[in-house]
Length: 366
Image 1 (tube, rainbow, N blue to C red):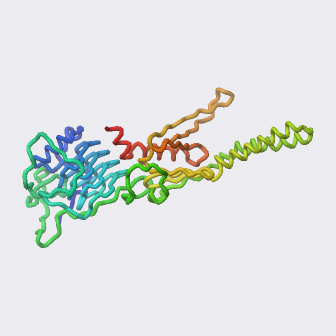
Image 2: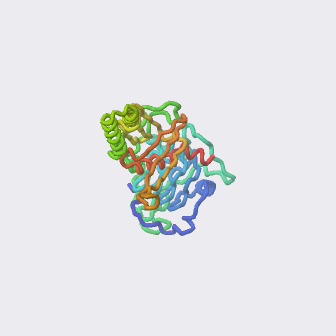
Image 3: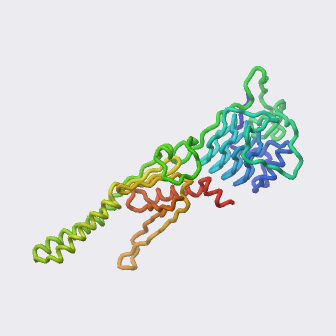
């Protein structure tokens, strides 16, 4: 039984022309004409919703940000391909091959993994129909397998690869063996953990979700000890002022410093007490005092990044501080500041996840 290629070198015949950006029309027209090998093709960001691409060989191809929602990808080969931020919602990836593929942030919600379709069969309910001004696909395309050396598509009954010319191992009879390609789909992996498609609804929610709707906890960001420095300084000044006012019997001074001390306590209690944040698979949570703000990635409508340069005596640069203002679909805003440890890293994670979220990408491309 032959397996999809694991050889990382470029397939013979993959010229520089193949690495130029291709359109969805080019890809589907080539598939309709019987072509099944699309190794190293540049298909970045293409809209291939509900497309039929059974047995297609995308070895080493660039499918970053491509929309394959509802597509039939039965037995497709994605070995060494880039599927970063690709959308495979509801796609049929039964017996598809993902060895070595880059699948960071890929959305495989409701993907079908156990219902392979055969030639001439269609998915039960495709989301969008795709049509081209080209010749229709043949009623029955020839059975294909992939060269174990270069990854090119070739007839199942072929003995030699038509591209590299190397002899192929014999294929076992379908009556006595399992299908030629029988890999298990690999779940995409993000920098913060394994992506598992959520069972919760993916529509933007008007209310703040609880932590069970945000998936697995990936990383925690506790409060920074630096947030106490300013409060401690002002509290110390207030205590010194109170003592001085009592010594000089100044009632007005005593009231003034008492108000300053009370203000320090109120500021700490409402804004700096119990500060922490968490990053989950499908969202984030930020807590300050008794208030906790949670949101899924698709519930973010905008992220603003602010950089402040600090100076000594007005001209000697001391350093930069980063803060982020996150606006949610409910209109609520939450800030990420230096009161949290690794605030810049936390802000960048939220910023990047907002950029690649399917909801936001749909807004930008509509």
